[in-house]
Image (tube, rainbow, N blue to C red; front, top):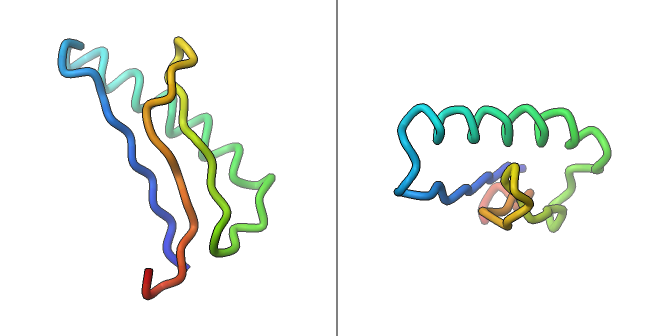
Length: 64
């Protein structure tokens, strides 16, 4: 399997704010993946701390 996480960070944010927000997203989704079978086709939108959709994670076939 291949796990893909793509997050678009606001270019107007400071480097410190981007790092903090990305860290929060990684902690949240890292703890949340246990609720999924992690089979190809699984995935979900990723939201920032203001509940704006900023990306997506997905499980793909190794060849995907």
